Amino acid sequence: MGEIVNLRRARKDEARRRREAEASSNRLAFGRSKTERELAAASAELEKKRLDAHRLTDGEEDEARR
Image (tube, rainbow, N blue to C red; front, side, top):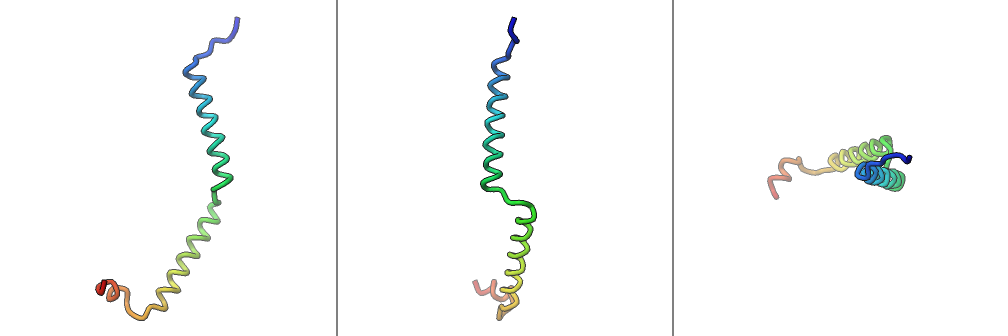
C-alpha cells in the first residue's frame, strides 16, 4: 500500500520550497554583505561631514530662512 499524503500539507511544502528558491536567487542578485552596507554608510557619513564642514552659515540659521 502507498504512503498516505495530506494534499494540503504537500501544497504548502511545495509553495515553501518555491519561495525559498526565489529568495535565494534574489539574495544572490540583489544582496549586499554586511561589510558592503557598513562601508556605504560610513562613506555617506564622511561625505556628509565634509559637506557640513564647508558650510558658510550655521545649520540652524539656514533652516530658519526656509
